[in-house]
Length: 198
Image 1 (cartoon, helix red, strand yellow):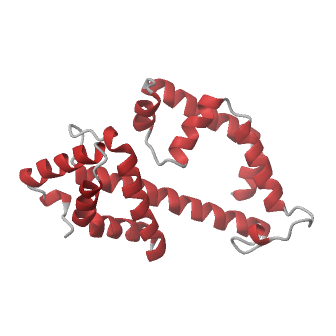
Image 2 (tube, helix red, strand yellow; image 1 turned 30 degrees about the horizontal axis):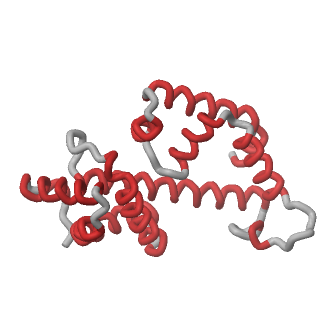
Image 3 (cartoon, helix red, strand yellow; image 1 turned 30 degrees about the vertical axis):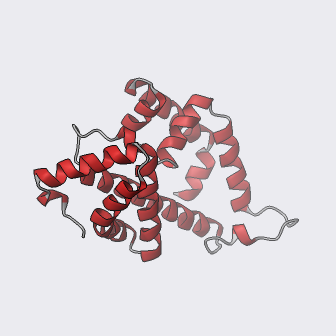
């Protein structure tokens, strides 16, 4: 049964903490119990952001996959387990929404339906979307490894800068600097692509 985190009792909070600790110990039944407690709430959060049931269900799976793989990063001094799960879900859903909107804007710029570039036949001349994708990939590949890693953890891993700093065992200020430098380089190298998407 889903629990509203704002009404969680101290007992429920301590039970959740024990479950997260058991997830750290790779106990599948503990993750199953967290799922039973919060899946309905998290699905509702994802659905409210995305408006599409299939995508919301994918986000729910991704949330528990991330919880399973990163349970050791949970800090009970900063939030309850339910809030931690809600924040993971929200971040992932917002990332998915931004990706969807970017694809739709990109498709609109080149005048094709979303996904059409992926269905093009090999051997044909490159479409503007394919050429743009190649330039973006080239710009990403040109970034220094540490800057690229920060961006990948943020955009594809759904991690906050604080979580990235913990994962990389790097000061938060260094992570922020790497992210800023990477974004400046991408903005400079992809000026034309950005202008086309605006």
